Image (cartoon, rainbow, N blue to C red; front, side, top):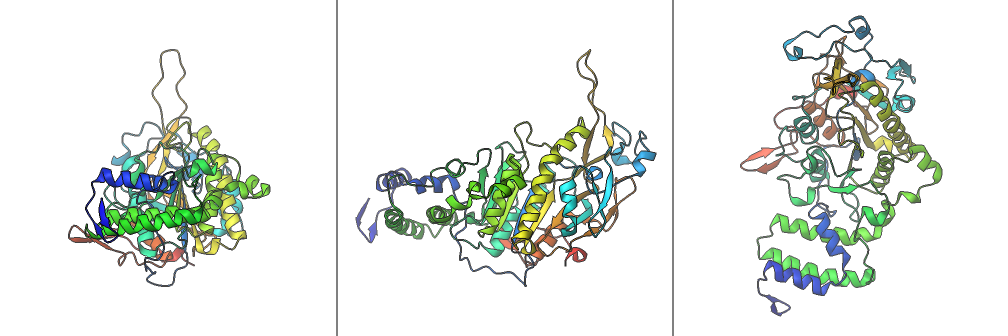
Length: 477
């Protein structure tokens, strides 16, 4: 393998693995680095914002499937008047059902008097810390491209995720933790890893994805602790391994993928200091646990707060459950399904906002609540089941031409509503906000000019917003 400490022969891939295995018998961090891959960022990349940021970190509460705007933050009493009538327009000529009013009542809340559905009583109580955008729009009413556009800015799986762009632009604040973490209660998510991919950005800007169906730390972070060696012994071994790695990288022109693996090993080692504590929500007092609730989404929200509190730059929580990887996709029995989903999401989301505020973190933590699009103001009438069975209860279809998003903290002007949809919630009527504008605004809040945050690849400069996007200045405090 080698003749002396400074003269190495190029090993084969397999022999190098054998060498590592023999040297690090039981060295769990090598296994952890393999799991993480190039998915973690070691601090100190020299990145800085373009201007003074209002937010330092982001938590995106992603409601997979698309929550209905007319049942949450955008009341449409006119739907009562036109109930059952078919919508007009080429886009909606294939609508299966007529206009379907929400069965939920809306009331004004807080000093701002923002109207919120009765299905979200907890978010209603913190609405003065929130901004509701009622004029969101995206390009495609299908899950896969809409999910990709909301997460990466492009309808195809070819671009880096927003979290990867943030990490590339700003780096991380804690060398002992990943800089970008994705929490998902189930491994089954439509599209999957392309939603949090680094794509053509260097490998260290990929997210660390964690399955949160079981919250025991040893299951969240498998192989993080070495059962046989002390921290100091592992440090000594890793120093030698990393010396070999750096020599290996130098002989391969410092390949960025290999460099990402080297950084992953270092961060995996450093995580022993902090991750076992940060990821352990059992350290929280009982009253805090009860405030969030005890569901997979609630536990993920609490873990997200602990992660950003300890320096993680970006956390995305994908709302999934055992029954569905797109639970908000209420094509049938919408009224009942929406209410059940809101019970879980509302409590934990509001608890996160309140908890961040109580700890002084909300002012520089941007919280986002929403999905890839909304749901139709008209009914989707399902086909009848097998003979003898009743017809399924009406649902709502995908709706991309007008929907709502909630933002809180992180430099947002709280207690405000921006934009408007038309009287029936079909189309944006005032101050449209495309996904590109949405992304430009998020980057701006974190001190990044979306036109200057670029990466040169394949002969051109790429950015999260491509060649589009305007910052929505009116919602910034």
